[in-house]
Structure formats: C-alpha cells, structure tokens
Image 1 (tube, rainbow, N blue to C red):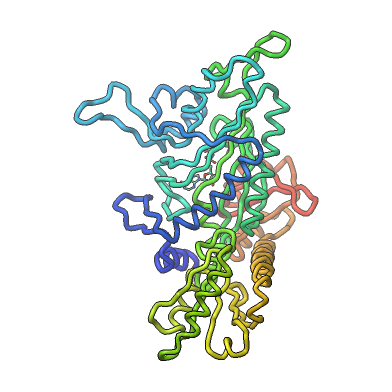
Image 2: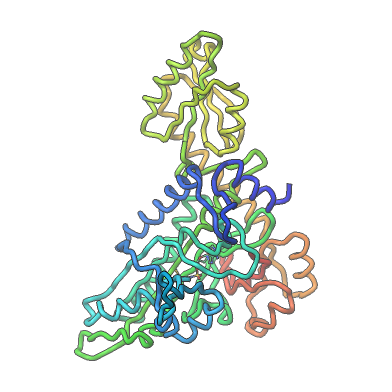
Length: 451
Ligand SMILES: Nc1ncnc2c1ncn2[C@@H]1O[C@H](COS(=O)(=O)NC(=O)[C@@H](N)CS)[C@@H](O)[C@H]1O
C-alpha cells in the first residue's frame, strides 16, 4: 500500500484522528490519539521545564495593527491569516487575527514586562492551537489549517551571546525530544531565502517519511533584535545604558505525532514507543469454556504490573481478533495467559516491534522493564537505519540529483560549495534546499522533496 493511503487508513482504523470535520484542514483527536498526543507533549513539557522554561497562556486573537507591526513577519504570514471581523452582528472597527504564531501577541507584553537587564532571561512557552490558511494540500497532523498542538517557546535575553546560547539549548532540547521518540532527524541551517519571517536565522529538524519525502518537524529561530526594535522592548543595561532585547523562539506541532505514526508504523499498523503508548501492555486471558483461571491470573498480573499502563482485555471475542486489534493500535507488549501457561508457571510475551512470541516465568516480571527498553532501542535502531538508507551523498550534478530525487527520493547531500548555494539551486534541482548541514563530520548542502 502506498504511504499516504496507509497513513490516512491508520488514522481511521487505530481511531487516532477523525478528518470528517466540516472545515478543510481541521480534524478531531479521538480518545486513543488524544492519549498519544498527551504523553508526547508531556515529554517536551518536562524537557522545557527542566531547563528553566515556564508554561503560559496568551490570547488567541491578535489585533491587526499588532500583527502587522514587524514588516517581514506580516509579509510572511499575510496570505495565511484567518481574520475575525464581527462581534455578533456588529462589525469590529479593528479586525482581529487568529494567531498563526504568537510573536506579536507575546512581544507586545514583553515590552510591558522588560525594563532592566535583570528582568531577563524570560523563557516561556505555550501549547496552543494556531491557525494558518494553508493553500497547499492539507493533511491530517502534517499540514493543518488549525494546528491543534503548537508548542511555541519564546525567550528574551540581555545579550547577543545569551540569545545564541539559547538557540543551542533549544536545539539540544529538540534532539533529546526526538531521540526519546526514536525519530531520526537532520539538523540544517535554513538558507537565508527560507528562514522564518522576522528571524535572523533558522535551524530546522527534518525527518524522512516512508515515501522518501522530507518533512520539517521542528524549527529554532534566532530573532536577534528584529522584533525588540519593532516592539520597542528596551532595557537598562548593567552599565546604565540602553539596549534592545535579544530574542529567540522555537516550535513543534502535531507533526511530532505524525512522525511517530509514520516512522514506526508498519503493515500491521501502529508501533508505538512505550513512552507514548496509551497502553504499554495489554493482557489477553485465553478463556476456555468456563475455566475462569486465566482471567483470575490475568487480574493478578494486571495488579502486579500496575506501575505500567496496562489494559486487561476480557471482552468476549476471539483472541485472534484481539491480537489483530492491539497490533493495529501499536501496543508495545502483549501478555497471553492460558491454562497451559498457568500449569507451567509461565507467561507468554508478544513484542509488537519484532512480532516475536516467547515465554518468561511468571515470577520474572522484572524482565518486563528490560523488554520494553529493548523494544524502544530496537525501534530507534530500525528507524535510524531506514533514515540513513534514504541519505545519498553525491557530487553536485543536477541531472543525477533530479534522477535520485525522482526515484529513490530521500535527502541528497552535496559537499558545501558557496558558489552554488543560492535560491536558483531550488529551480535547477526542482526540489527544496533544506540548508547547510553537518553529516558524519562533513559540511553539505541538503536537498530534498518535502511535505
Ligand atoms: N500547517 C501546519 N500544520 C502542522 N504543523 C505545522 C504547520 N505549519 C508549521 N508547522 C510546524 O510548526 C513548526 C513551527 O512553525 S514555524 O513557522 O516554523 N515557527 C514558528 O512559528 C515560530 N514562532 C517558532 S514557534 C514548524 O517547524 C512545523 O514543524
């Protein structure tokens, strides 16, 4: 089955996201998908909180004049903004934007909060919905018009060096986030012609989906003083002088969830990293006629394993149907308990990642931890192997680049060469220039067909 069909099919059959909402680019997180989203964003919240960030919440609506304040920013977003023009039947005298991202909402307040250098660093983030009138093909969790899970961090610093350091910290945070999820990535410095509107420079994380197309899954922007000059965020320096704040911002979205589904999934369905799996273990008692023993044993096991997210499936349906359903939903580990197992004081384990079945003694439950860790390690290795197979290093040869992108796809790396690194390159190779990147210690220009 072709990837995009597999992807749409799995969102529906594993009951993750319902695309039938009557607005293009909008959809509904179903309970199972919502849990994956919850556990995924718990990871990033923890990583941000541990590094001195505070979670906040800003209004959704941004007055038109505020959004338009930073010239480059508004130029970059004016074709993507949704507007509110009425309050009830009354026409608003100032139209209001649904935030496409919150720089202009937040930096208006930074101006009120920042007076002296000791008011910084400010390191805040919010996890909100944002709205972009995407004209390209919308796709669930990949290219939404209502971005349902937009984690945006915004920081302000009293020196250029501190802002540069913050960019590096943000990159470390995202590396740890995607490593925890087993999602491989290439970090590139976006070319100047493709940086975030209003940024000095942008670093981006790109991964590769099974169809070989690259997708931007995170971005880190050094805004320097572009916004602080526009919003007049001036502070008193230690020596009593005046300066504009130095700022950064960095964001991820529902694409983190799309990546977990796309990268770890297989023909049987989802294969979820234990850390985000709504159920890490499902217990299936093999019930024969009126033999209640397996069910009682299963309940005992569930109790013993209560430090995990365990589902005891005691529904009155055939075990085979249960196995297929939990494999489709990507539950990392299944335990089967039948009369023979009980007799032999064993439990049967099924690993979703390798689809292998084996037995452990019923009093060796401490092995479960190491099996779940091994599952994650194996999933990560498999994903990195697939990712690296999609990387092609070659000398600059337009025809070979085009031929490779049309057949193998993936990311092409050509040795960095200033003389070809310009916006014409994209037209020549009929693909996106992801930017300049380091790969296995060498510097390259990365090129790919992207989402
Ligand atoms: N339409 C969309 N649907 C889903 N995710 C999106 C969409 N547009 C962008 N994203 C994701 O959101 C991330 C952050 O968006 S951004 O425009 O690059 N950066 C910002 O908005 C900055 N304010 C940092 S928070 C992107 O890296 C991309 O992974």
